[in-house]
Length: 127
Image (cartoon, rainbow, N blue to C red; front, side, top):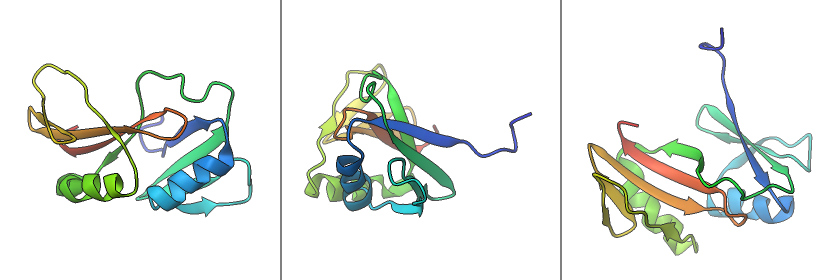
């Protein structure tokens, strides 16, 4: 039923203005639809990301959005770090932390948070 339909990541934030600075300036996303100033939609590859104000922003303890970045992870992580992004380090079976990247089982993964504490990730390899 939905296998041929696109999905949109929806990310709750406390302050849309602060979120705009992060998603546009830090992550480099461009608005795809700015018709709703309080709920911007960003283009990311062939996907869309909707950022909206919510009192529940940052309460999810799991990953909210993941970007498949192929081999670019080794360039993207330091570039984001240079823009002030702090990366999360987790103890996970089968993965070791090398710098800010978790490596193992045919994948490289880096987790970071947006200003509201939403967990975002970059993945290289099979996901």
